[in-house]
Image (cartoon, rainbow, N blue to C red; front, side, top):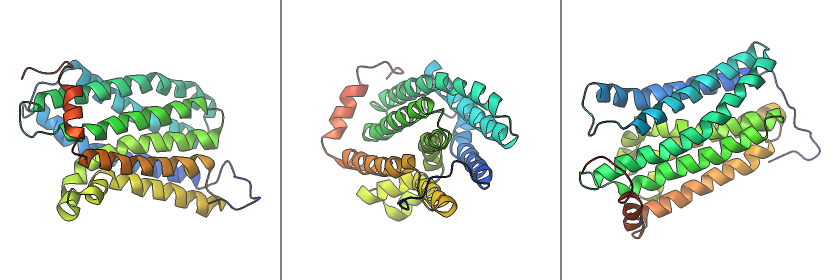
Length: 254
């Protein structure tokens, strides 16, 4: 995936527009995937009353998107010193997003133990989201002094959660075409994620004639994780395991 002897160029004049386009695509996914459900909850149409952890999860997710947008705009404006100082706010958000995401899903699945649909098998998907996001975002913080690696790790970690938003918006329609079998589940759950991964790899190749090392290992790792998630989701032994995880943990009254 890399041309031998060709150094990776840290900056290209198209970078600013590529990452701005990514942010706009991410916001569109958030609006399509989460705003209708949020408005329904405000209107009292939700299955259960939102716990505090769900509010924390939603707020931390929005703050991550706002911070990402601000960081991209600061770089476009040449204010890299402010970009570096404010970027550490993201490091504080990562554990909040991971923990609140996990417990918000536990709360939801605890409710559905006694109310249809019986969806505990799906629990593996949000588990994979929080694990992948937490790992990639933490690596982005660790590599913050290496700009090309850092921004690609931010891209990968955000792609995970943006993919979740797009899956909420389009997953049902895609599943109507592909079904919910092994490969169908990958299509209806991870389509947006994989399109973004393909775009990042293609962008590096077009602009640098090679793919950055972060993408060279990160993209295959994410794709392999999707294969594992779909296998677990369809495995007969997973549902009782998921129920055993969810049942004893706090949730709404059932």
